Length: 332
Image 1 (cartoon, rainbow, N blue to C red):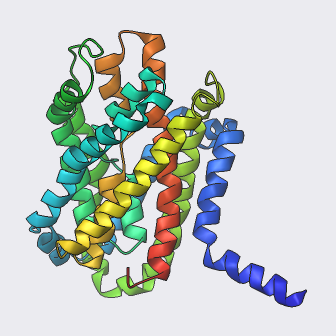
Image 2: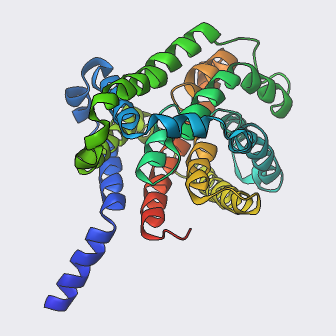
């Protein structure tokens, strides 16, 4: 009996990050009201993101940032997956499997495949998994900037005529948001690093623990904010097919990124970054982009955005599992 308890505790300690991610997800889904208390009027979330990216900025040596920004092969690899491989793979998978999915949700899945990477979560998971944080920040920003032009173009290529409307998202608003959300906290962190750079090893444990706590809170906020849409969906049976499809799609993209990354000679640190940045899809920019294109028909739009909401949760859970796997298997 004692041996069984000890074994259970060992497994729990080994997989604590997955358990915490799942707990954050469950609390967000079934206790969404707490989000209003912890994140009044949405003010806590941007502050937490700022702190997390500030911690990234203060942790990374300046010379490494300069070196990592010059790795154009890695940047092309990640952007190619986001805007070329991902949409093409989704379109090809829907050809044989589309008959099992509602047509409006199919359009939503195609729209999802055309979106850029997340503005923040791909950076967080890259950082806590031993990836190239500088490349994650750079490619998250580049994909969101490029999406202003590329995403509507991909919509037009992949989605049947008549389903989209001619509308646009303001590039100025996107650029300003990226500077405020990503660039500014990194620069502030770099500025704070200079007088502390010789003693940074003393703060590694504290920075890691604080970063993990913030990630769990952000997962809770994200799930709680969208849980109403999930729980009030027309039919869970209707969405069983899309959920399975999106889970398979996420797994296939991760396998392809890992395989192609090894084939093209990316080192482990860069492969980790490519896994998260290349497989994530943004909810923050995805909602206004899809609203600009499909928002003219509110009932239709509700079905279109559900794949994005579902996939956001799938990528959070899979990223938590992947992070534990990466930390435990340094040879990956």
